[in-house]
Length: 195
Image 1 (tube, rainbow, N blue to C red):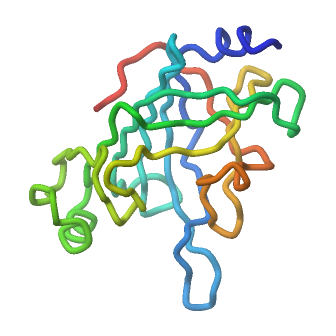
Image 2 (tube, rainbow, N blue to C red; image 1 turned 90 degrees about the horizontal axis):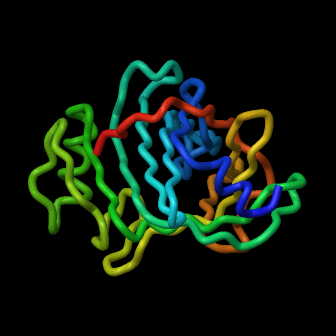
């Protein structure tokens, strides 16, 4: 497909098939990577706008939600990616919004310890904007937009992004752009995503 065809096919809402697992930057005492569980809801709109809602879980079955993160911004298309014919290099830039909502008391208490400066008291269900602010738990720096160097690939009615590096590295530079495909998202009927 040509880029315009990819954008047309991408338009709409996509969701995780089931809870997903990622390697986190945190390590267990034996040096292995701690798992990171989540679900994703992604919307792509005209003007290369996107909205991504991620819910993090404490368990592999997605029964114990920890936090909801909503990121809004724009996608910059950077050309073909060699992973598969039709795959594209894409930069996701959160230049519109970035919010965090603790969903358990334990996570709210952690945020009270590590992210209190410049924020209201963290409470379960209380959404706060971290947009343009320092937010140590996610490595956000004041005055900078969060950005990831990723990829997009559409195949068999599914949306693939890049798989996380097994060593826990983020997609924070073009050199760290993923080289493998992640578990896909499936198209969802049009819906309004939560803020």
